[in-house]
Image (cartoon, rainbow, N blue to C red; front, side):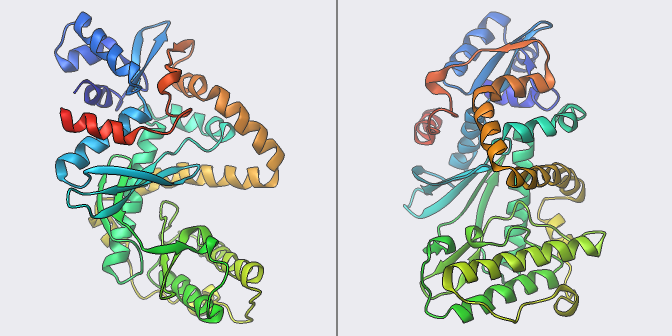
Length: 370
């Protein structure tokens, strides 16, 4: 597959020279141009004309295709259903295996947050030749899968992780409701206590969720909470003060939500110094699951910049909305300029994944035909 060769070249080039793709593929220049042109029309790669050389870069559509091909070969995914979630950093679909068992496919898409955030991180990305938003999305998926696996093995109520490849995770389909959509609960006091106990239990394992709120909690019919979304989860900070800040933020998110939604407020809530004596250490387990210390530190560096940018945007929502509009118009050219100055990228609006929903079902059918 030629798009695999483009992916290989992307390890050291944001824009992979056509000559390098031909060399890796062991094909003549004329033949490779024809194949790449066909892939570009399907939005699996994108051509970029540069003053130094012409080349191609892998698109998110192409990255989706490669992940789906791997999942199909493994028997993890047989069909793709409806999209059930979309955010600034991920897309979520219902999928099924060949036996009809429903699962959830989560595609990480870092870089789709705001033009301002991409601009603020440009220096970091330029200093690492192999860095790209797809690479960071892959690290994000690897991290979430590793934490999900370790948490499940240690008795936490989280979705069962099934498979991971590139920027994608497949997990169990939950028969539950997002807490943000639950207007009434039979016993708000019990649910409040369950959630606070979960925050404390995580801390005793040396973990802080970092985004513990109604958007990342599911409630089963029996009232039991399930924790989801782990890319921002952190292990022990070198500085305990920062641990306290993140812990208190998670606690306050739940207290604030229960005040607003259920008119429930308790004077009892956990305090980091009093309630979180560390009993377990999951560092070794997380590393053993495939996400090592170097990858963790690399991911946390860019993650910290993203979170810092989010805080700035929350303080000035009007500027954020304006920047988002600029980002929608300028994303392709700005991302290319991060790495290659004076370049021009050819686009295919009719198949642009940012202007239309990703055609995962169509891609999966193409995968099966190969």
